[in-house]
Amino acid sequence: DTKISPHCPTAASLPTQKCLLEICYAIDAYVKLDPKNTAVIYCSNGTTRTGIAIAAYLKYSHQSPSTIEGFRTFCTKRCHNLIKNHGS
Image (cartoon, rainbow, N blue to C red):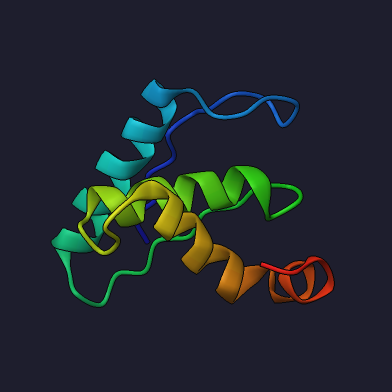
C-alpha cells in the first residue's frame, strides 16, 4: 500500500494554489504508476475543500475543460441532494 499525502491547510481554510498543485501532482503520479491505483481525497465535510481539489485535478488531468466544469461534475456526483434542493 502506497500512501502519498500532501499536507494542506487546516479544515478551517480553503486549499492554497500551491496545495492544489501538490495534490494534482501527487494524484497524477500515483495513478500513472499503475492503472489499478485509486486516489482518495478526504476532507471532514466532504464537499467544499474536497470539491475544489477534485475540480483542480479534473482540469489538471484534462478530464474537464475548466475548473468550474470539474466542480460541477463533482457536485453532480457528490452533492446531488444539495443541487436537487437548491437548483443548479
